[in-house]
Length: 220
Image 1 (cartoon, rainbow, N blue to C red):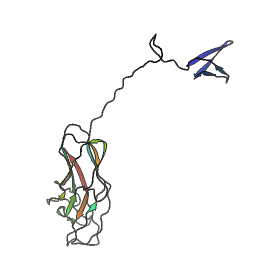
Image 2 (cartoon, helix red, strand yellow; image 1 turned 30 degrees about the horizontal axis):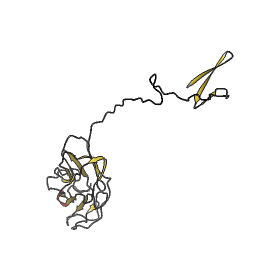
Image 3 (cartoon, rainbow, N blue to C red; image 1 turned 45 degrees about the horizontal axis):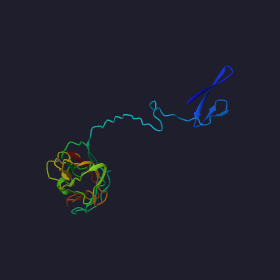
Image 4 (cartoon, rainbow, N blue to C red; image 1 turned 30 degrees about the vertical axis):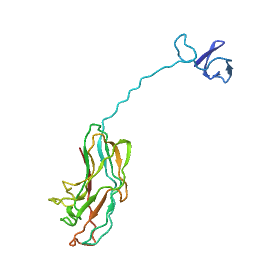
């Protein structure tokens, strides 16, 4: 509250704080018994009053998304061997469409190849994905629980560009078959999350590094 104090021909501006006011020149004036703040109540109302405000919030459109873990190097293995299951890292997926959409998160991959080779040294059929075995971690007010997918080896097919072409079929990691499942979930980062198993053909040249691109897709 602002009070004007007349001093001679000059007016000084003061700012109220609780029961006192501080004047611009540093002097202090006290009002005994004067209220620091008076609520804007209707005439005749004493003791207490209430006042309301109206708030408006716009809820943005929902999404159907999946977020892949970071890439890493797999365990080295010899030609003609099959690796143990290797953890792919924490995978997050979200359905906030709230429209009863049923969806599937699938994994696929390119073949493992090397820039110096024009063939798939580890073809699609030798790459297998297993879905998570541990509990999903919900977030974002998630409701319901998705269903674990089937996983399996990638189907063989025509790999037109080894190391670049993604297997067009893929395998499922998680499914939503209920209209009431909404929110965000994340798999475990370790071996109770999604894993990959690689079988290196006996004819694969050794002492060479090969790479592949894993692709996760959510469709509904």
